Length: 400
Figure 1 (spheres, rainbow, N blue to C red):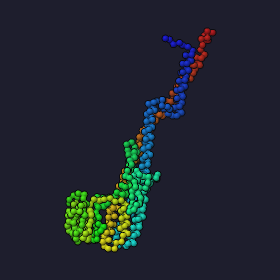
Figure 2: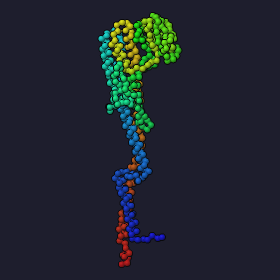
Figure 3: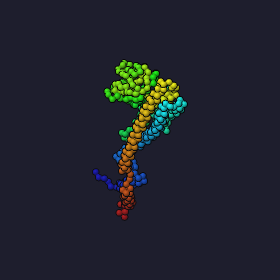
Figure 4: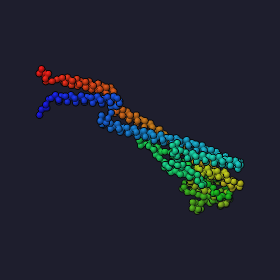
């Protein structure tokens, strides 16, 4: 079958050619105007799909950056607040040492107690600090209400123990601010491992001078009670009250049993008891309240004065542990801030690489595009010229 050559077919082909050239010119004009070679997805479907994926990656990096800024702000505030709390504890330690001076009058100790009350109020205030957006720093995930409140007999923690983990870069997480229960509430007493205390009912003047691990034998973690059975004799009782040891005692000498040692000065009365064993936990607010109570209590008898001295020395140890715990929390927060800085560098580097790849996929090569535009423009003009000349061609012209 042969195709018929007709004037209509020639007109149609010429018109189709000119329209195709015009369409290509329009596309090039759009690219030159926008500076993008991917004006629509049909320009290069594969490149367009890759570009969309890279856009999503950039958006994710931006989200990670916002997460990092938020948690960095909270951790920075935590650092400042814990520094302030540490200053409070340093002052408490100074006041406790000052109050332990036997030459002070009751009025002097009352003045110290008044300052400690002010510090206690300040500690509760800083523990209820917010991050500037209305969220409480030390409430864990329950950060929509104040985590600490005064209750009968002390201070209660109303938050939870959840510490959020925030993604700040692909597969990189940092911990949010530490829950207040881990900073202010669960503070180890004594030296953090061991603690020793005098029975509040003691009638003598025995004062704990020091305690720790003994030079011989291994401690099995059990608590012991030293019960004085006479002016210079004592029994050692285990946790169940059974007698497991004993001996004679001289003021200031160490009593050693089960891998532990404790030094007791003064003169305990018969029936006085001293406990030594694993350190428990106490919140820093209770430590301050106990310290205030010891300073405000009347101590006129030697036994009452010895009880106050034991309370003050115990408070000094507990304050030192609370200060160390706050320092540990600050160090942990500082490590998280360092991770945030490192993640920022990773995000920036990844962002530069992705932007470069997107530029290769989308950005127009103006030199190439202008050359193509000129070529297509010339081709269109040529097609238009040919079409114009073809219009003048006719078989009747040849027959004249």
